[in-house]
Structure formats: C-alpha cells, structure tokens
Length: 262
Image (cartoon, rainbow, N blue to C red):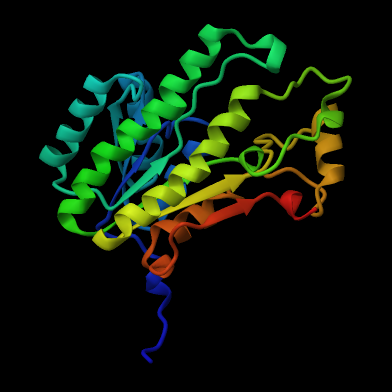
C-alpha cells in the first residue's frame, strides 16, 4: 500500500463549476475550492453578479471566472456548456448549489410559486447535470456535488417556528428530498464512467452569528448547540471534490451539527 499524501485534498489544475456561487453558501464553497487550487467557474443569473463574486476570489490570489447561467432556461444551459468546452475544454467538478425560493407552507404556496421553484430546483438541476455530465463522460472522470439540505432527509421541527417570522417552506423539502434520490440515480448511471455523485446536506446557517429567536431555538435542538457559520460546510465540499474522496459516491452527507442524529 502506498503512503497517503495530503495532496489528495488539493484541486490544482481542476476546473470546478459552482452554480449560484454568489450566494451565502455558494460564496463560501467557491472560496474554499479556490484555496484548494481549483479554477472556479461561478454562475449567477446576472453576469455582473457572477463577475463580482469571481473578483472576490481573484483579488486574493485565487483563480475564478463568472458566467451568466439561468438553469431554468434550456438554451442558457446549452450556451453555458458550450462556453465551458470552448474556454476550458474540461470540467472536473460540478457543485449544484443554485436554488430558487418562493412560497411558504402548504397553504401559503401558489401553483405559480411551485412552478417557478421547480423550473430551477428540479428541471434546472436535471438540465445542468445532464449538460456537464456529458463533458465528464467524454473525459471519463468527474465529481458532481449536489447541495441538499437536512430538510431533504427529515421533516422540519415545526415547533421551532412558532412565534418567529421564519416559516418552513413546502417546496424545499420536496426539492431537496428529490435531489437525494437523483444523486443516487446518477451515482449508479455515471459510475462506470469514473464520475462520482454525492449529496451534501447542510443544516441551518447563520452567516453573521447574531442570534434571532429562531436561531436560538434551533441551536438548542442541535447537539453542537449552534447553527453553522463561516466555512462549516466548505471542508466537506472540498473533500467530495478532491481525489481524497475517490471511492465515495452515492453518499448523502449531513453537515448539521448533529441535527439528523436525533
């Protein structure tokens, strides 16, 4: 058996696409992936937003580019995939992080809300995965990381929302639960091509660390007694992207402070 090297966690010379990479979780993933050596391609529906997120990385010495992508639009997805081929010639990692939010609980969600979220979170997930996986099949290697949620694994604890302005959202459980099933399907179909597919399921995230009534109640229910902050989920994303996870596929990994362990 050969000795293990920490270089297995490096992503040097790899091209990594992060959809929705300008968002709260996405920006953290992008920064960590760039720190591991990757060239990060950040997408947003607005070109300016994507470029701004890329500048936040390049100004600190990382490698990143911003590209517009509306994954609800098949033409936009096709154009994006063609740009990846023309500019980089390969894609080593796809992080499916983009999400559209609308509606609320069962009686606070309209058919229009449901269709809008499904266009991005369901059909869009399929379209971008299909287009990028086609590139990975040609190179016979790759890693797809779907960013799910603990609410794709378990039901929300509705008691935590009582008396707070925060509400559980029906579509979110539906879409994130479906993402887990899609992850396992893709792992089986794409495995023979050397492509790994996994699902990372973060718990509640508080970027500022300033507790609200909901955050305090949420933290009290969590074994680690806090919400996620900073780069709590980034290390797991880098791991799944890297050669260190070469034998990990079809996995659903919660990063939730122990929330789903109860």
